[in-house]
Image 1 (cartoon, protein in one colour):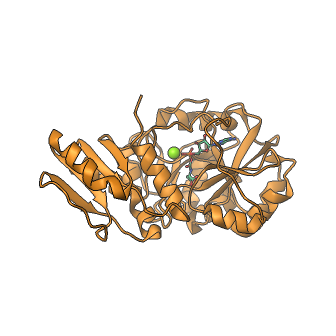
Image 2 (image 1 turned 135 degrees about the vertical axis):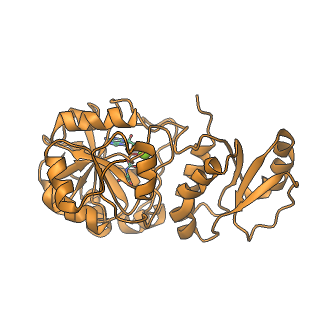
Image 3 (image 1 turned 90 degrees about the vertical axis):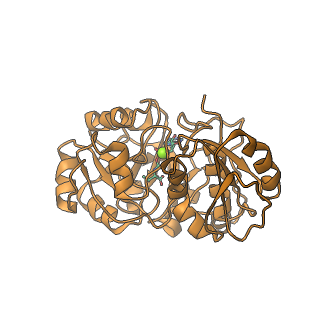
Length: 322
Ligand code: TXA
Ligand code: MG
């Protein structure tokens, strides 16, 4: 287990090049001082993540956009930052001189975000930029409590700053504003509709043909169990097909009426999108903790708002693993 520390100790450790798990409103991050390449390199070793995958740099406030992390910040980026930071939004911008290769994976862009969690903000007042991916082993489910972090990485990191359970529960929305035409690279805690309202224009999802950063793999956010993501209307039929093959869980809101085989164990998840997002990773962890080797997860019936990010994560949990 890594020791649980206070904000001042966390800041001291980060300045000394150590790894500290930090709470954010989305998920816990595995933080290192973004300006120390050796410290950043330790993140990749701890996670077992390829070092070509770029990291998000967490900053204190929107005015840090002008402190050397980014270059040529377009008006659309400033508008989004003004309204949505601190909050679950990551902006991909052209990189500035402070964004190290160790952080960007050598890309010409950098991901920046100002998190809303009060402890993260207090820490960022003391340490200028914190590079942090989600604090889980590569490819597994993101942590939304300090206990999740300890289970996954407790023996590989120097400390945990415990900020309680994450309120949003799902990662930030990533918007690429580096090219002039904003596009969503990853749906998340800020809905597409909110982005479009602020910018007064459609904000497309990056298509499958669009260049993606390394680290946007199909299989991600996945429990050990084999997961099948299904639309609500297909759930009963798929359950009957799959239940022939042994013990299996089905995750769906209790409000969804289903005709299910006896062999299948139903696990309730919240129907309300905000609550479902907040508890999403906990519910995916429960599949493994309860010893299921397979699970059917029912997609939200409405993929607007937070439904888009929830459906994205469930589909990724169900994507083939190789
Ligand atoms: O909510 C979040 O975003 C959390 C908390 C800790 O802030 N962080 C997070 O980090 O989810 P991570 O590393 O698990 O996911 C970040 C994603 C990766 O898929 C990475 O490829 C992408 O952001 N990314 C980072 N920098 C990028 C860049 N310059 N261009 C394109 N994608 C980038
Ligand atoms: Mg992650």
